[in-house]
Length: 368
Image 1 (tube, rainbow, N blue to C red):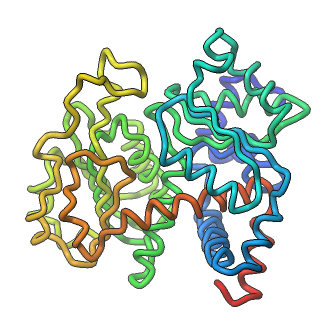
Image 2 (cartoon, rainbow, N blue to C red):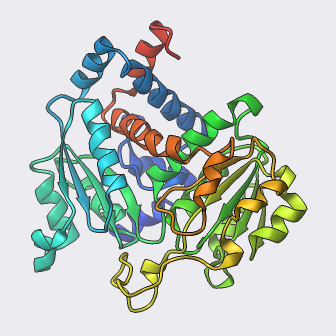
Image 3 (spheres, rainbow, N blue to C red):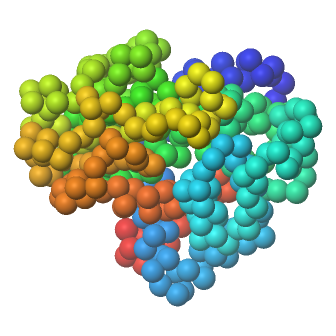
């Protein structure tokens, strides 16, 4: 693929061009942004995740799954602190029989010696069959995919979080959780979703908003501090898909006026690791963590919402979602966590071309 990095990156913003750089043989090969998936592809990913989850309940199913990627080697390169996401990817690869290697301290790698992204990923591609990357640089995953796309040994690159920009697999597991939670009410189409927190810097909340544009007539309410409100580019993208979107600067007034109409609430923490003076992607050890009162979902706000309102959080949480909310019937945070393993296994199955076989087997066995 003879593209400059800038041309490769710019292709991701174009519906007509992004498939050419992100897909191989009609399937997603590089997983970098939420916008790359169509509604049909999202449904296929969810169905693949469900088939894996149900096959894994039985001995024969587990043996079948673990033969699919046997011998494949996955490098998990995490240049930002992460336990939950990293272990989720390791567990997901294990479900399909792949072997994982985790590097969580890049001070032990050649990055600390000034090696370029291009040279590093080309070296890793000699030993591994896929790379999962988490990095404070918005463009790290894109640059890695671009570098590998020009080589004779192109391997999949999956973003596990890129700077303040996107966290595509988090949005996929969030959608999988929403889809399941709203299934009895007709799915995600036409639903009202409230996304709370540091929208300007929270890649999980931003990625979910991008995914919601794939559905018919949802309404999005962002609630954020003024200093960390959604940027114009995100708002224009959402409105460009004929989706109603509103920006608020406190939770309580919104719930008082519209609480009964809200189908799902997505809480996130204040992204203080990006504050001036901190190492990129890492909070200060002297910093007091937590968010202001206007962005805390106080337990007494339950009176404003329906019992079936879905309550989600990508974790970690600090003070914005008190423990008492676990009593709420729509609290699905712990299901979200486990869904991360299933949807990431589905992503691996997709990029390695095993997803259709998994879905077919699930249907034959009556598991779908």
